[in-house]
Length: 128
Image 1 (cartoon, rainbow, N blue to C red):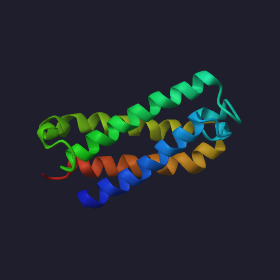
Image 2: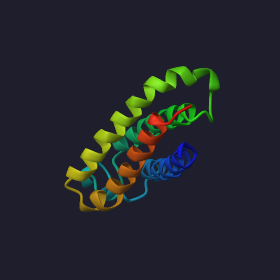
Image 3: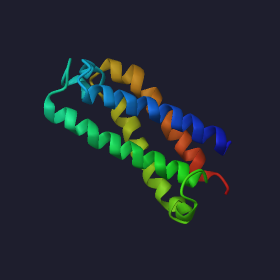
């Protein structure tokens, strides 16, 4: 189950990262993110924020793949504990995507975030 979960996690994480890259490059999809506060093209500061979100998501992915035994085997013992930060991160993400004023975020990103959360929990609770 861990192997399937980690690859499903990776697939959806790549989708979210590609979306953030697109927003950062100026795609007019602002109504699909950040509560729809910036419809159209994100302002410059928000486009810079996309870079930080990409970095955070990359770190989360690295932790999950390390915990699954795919990356950085020397860091595995750390990942056993730090994976719970990933679970907490996506738990908060689920809540935020469910309460957002943006209908499109609730429709698109809430399910994606739920999938990321469930997969991270399955990886976190799997046996080595």
